[in-house]
Length: 169
Length: 195
Image (cartoon, rainbow over all chains, first blue to last red; front, side, top):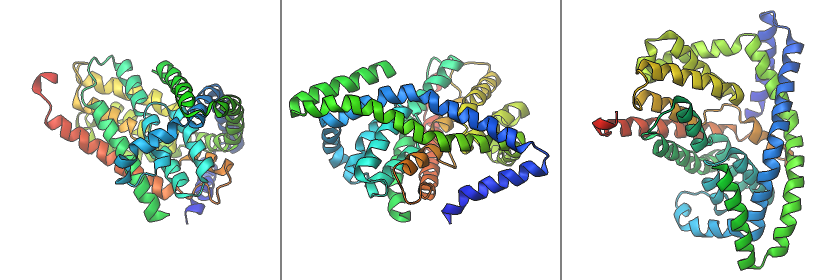
């Protein structure tokens, strides 16, 4: 069933556009251009961050962090391979993506750890960065309970990612 | 923060490599990582491009506005003060729509406008609960179509790149509910002088 979601969205978007007299091709091409620019735009960040993430993995730091966190994470069902992702994702979106890609590649993209990593990435945001942007923009002096609540929400996403992958495969 | 994070990561890698004796692997990782980033971004470009195209089409044809209109009544329950001001509510709903569709480039500017108007309703004083809750909502991912992750999965040869979607939805919903519940709970036990 899920394999139909994306094709059907494409079809609905197309039909809705035709019914509302939208110029389909120019709109599509304009959007694609923006998307390609985004892909190019994140390239410098990815070069810098993927290098750092690979260095961390090659040095054995990520394995060590996984082993240290394992007693804590074991009860939650988060695989040890994904434990460093729990630490990195709330801080940096591109860093999380870089590390997630490494996990998926090394453990196998359709393995349990690989799938949990993918769901963890898809279900969480770069919380601390987002809070920084909003509070900076509003010139809020105190962030109140925003940070603890956001961290709790991230953690809920991570733990339930492992649960959902086990339930839904 | 990124400055400290990057330098910290490189430094920890160097120290750990010296301790574990994996210095050769560390050196190889430097050249490897940079090259791999280029491959990764190139393999993401196709699907990211296509998806932005579809989203642009949805914006131009008014499909996004329609989704916003559906979301408005639900969001009014969450943001009581904003519900009394149509233009604030409109922007909050537009921000949530953009987040749902994965239009992160559009979500942040609209979100900041919405937060601004919301803060105005509280005379820009202190850190009102409703403003904090809106920020927390934005830190919990509510993306319907995890395009980037699916693109990464596709580039690594996954059988069905998008088949993680139900699990992503489940985890996202749980995360949003946890964030909102935590916010409401923290708000209840908040010392008065902080308001």
